[in-house]
Image (cartoon, rainbow, N blue to C red; front, side):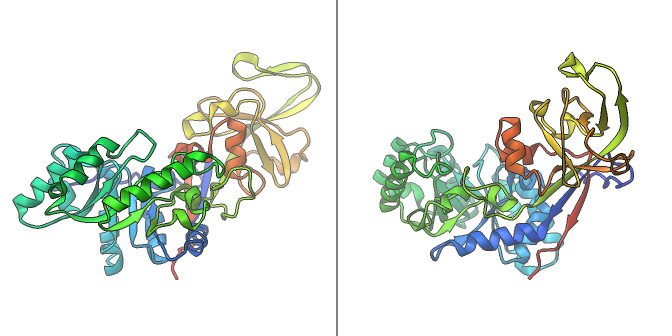
Length: 385
């Protein structure tokens, strides 16, 4: 299937903001998570374009660190990733497994086969359709089985699992690589839902012992060895999001977002700032306008709540976040540190991804996957061993 060419990179000089992505930090996080597993293997979830950071360079860095199993959400993501891994010419990368969590949509069987993608089958109908396709080809193509243990989202519900147990021939002619389920509350270690799902998954494996067992997501890895089984599937923790909210974050920070100052205005009299006049300046101040907005994934909920840094000096967001611009109070920053074109750290060492998310009233996942494409994207490190 032909793919749309990627847009040309945006020049550092032309971009209003710079997003720096540390591939070595992603690799370090992969190794940290791998070291926490008790004999299980580690895959990598790179859906949503690698959580907004670029699935292709992220996967290449992880493959260089030894990762050979990737998960994406949609078949199109899988097709693009397969082509990118093929283009490397590295035989190890080319042979990597790519699993598609969204399952088998109608009339996609040929595309799965052509790109050597592995469908995660989440219903009896999907199992039937994949089995019929394998029988037509007279070869057992690989697949996964996804069973719901408490999310009521994707995966075979208990009644369909029972039918599989009663009629095991439904799985004949399938090459089942993995049986998976997904934790609903893994980021809440004391939530009883975790133990309930663990019991359900163990019972599931008694009846469906085929292939590997995969249960733990990023936070699930930190629930301990009982949740590890054969293969863990982390996503957000690879990209620096805290796996256990409220605990010290052991993950290396992966992204730095810096916006450019377009103008600094001295305000000598009481005045309001931005749309809706939501912030009022009561004493002389200096306001910097920075070239980033909600069109770039700097969420509107950060209006009057977000914080940037110029060096180590915090500069609060004042007024509403607009489509292309934000305004920051730089009154406490020496003028020579904030000329036009100077960079303001909006995500970085002083304000990591989870802190920004908390200010926005959301989670680090949304911050990452909202990051826009008007940035100049700079990848540092290579992640090779």
